[in-house]
Image (cartoon, rainbow, N blue to C red):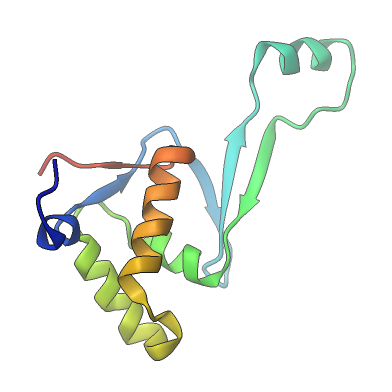
Length: 116
């Protein structure tokens, strides 16, 4: 259990090994979610046009944060980098950053906490 704000800022995330994603020339990330549920596979077999991947394109800020997640940087490091790159546009930094990281961890399963 996290006891205080300092514990939260020291969390280190990494991108899950099984996640597939693309980065374009502008550093915009597109997550490729495999659609391999048995129902989807069945309908593909009977010639329904169901794409193999669902593509989720992140915006500029989310892409920047996502590309910072390397299994070494803490939440605090990522927040400091956000402030350097975007300045006042990124405020309130940690409230927004933690909300985003929690979402892509808990709801999307794109990242996970490391055990460092």
